[in-house]
Image (cartoon, rainbow, N blue to C red; front, side, top):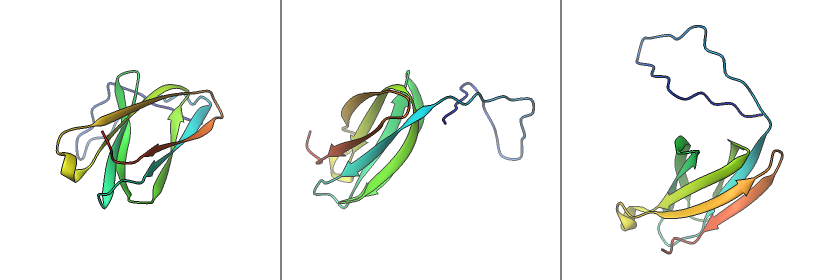
Length: 105
């Protein structure tokens, strides 16, 4: 299951009450990096909103739960600076797919 709620702003020491997050069947995406740099970074985006991101060591992977639908993955490496490579994938509820990036533009 996957749930998200946009438009919330929480600052250190604050608490939000009365917030409801509705869970729906989600999907899984495994992100694998095989490029020359020691690690690659990724950001996950759905419907124009950030879902999160992280880094993956060369040869490693990261499994993420995402909402069903179109997911955009933006990859970058330290040597690429601000340049990114974008991959798009459409997932149905319950799907599990792998995206591999070799570090090339």
